[in-house]
Image 1 (cartoon, rainbow, N blue to C red):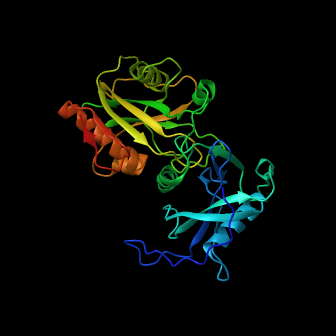
Image 2 (cartoon, helix red, strand yellow; image 1 turned 135 degrees about the vertical axis):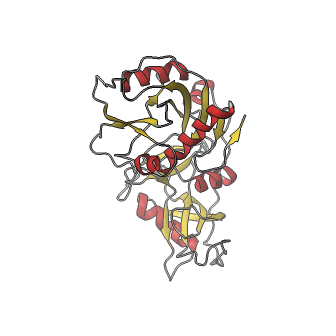
Image 3 (cartoon, rainbow, N blue to C red; image 1 turned 90 degrees about the vertical axis):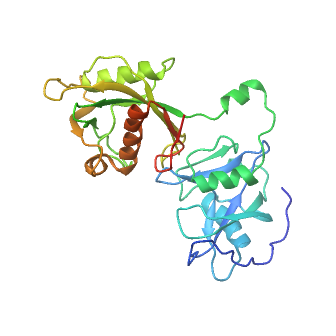
Length: 317
């Protein structure tokens, strides 16, 4: 990166639909010799660019330099302004500047008083940052260089592959499970009811994994039916990879006659919820309830539902 003197203060950029953009934020875009971007992990698990709110006596470029010094213990110079965006976590514009460290090797000896760790990431393999930050870095960050095959394979994007077993009662109620809480558990959905299912094992396809998870979590031993839905979900705080969920139809079961069990204690309770009328939303949360309703609708249409996020209009095919 080229070093330069600090640019002059920037005028505030209006954001459509906002009456106030709050205090502007200076962000630092720092890259290594491979073109990877420096990100810092917060205590809640979310990754972010080094950033600091702009003080009344400074401009965003100076705030970006101060952010790197306060967050990492590294002195730097501000280069060109990369761009401005709003990351969705707070009503403030982030003015991002390319920074270069004063001392060679300083970025290998980071001191992090406010973050749990740091990492260097290619812009096509970013961890759990906000969707707005993903779009910004993909548009303005450096492109991945040509790498030797072994290094390329080690840094290719990854996702959690998960599977869900959809079982309903004859009256349409949906079978849900109550997972055992692990401590500490800071996930926002901790304690809510969930679908029978889980992460696929290595060398396991989604129908096989769904049948295995259903058997382990409920004791029901049956084969998977048609694929009802596939959902892609952005990484939650604390998770570095997105989730791809496969919903498989396992038909109906009579709550009055089936005996549900879980031998390893991973599931502590079972219940049948009506997917409409708010009952499932209250028990499992609106996102899960919405995914369940879309998957159940696919039973009727016979068409697999796909969606990039659970609260968006789904495309079918």
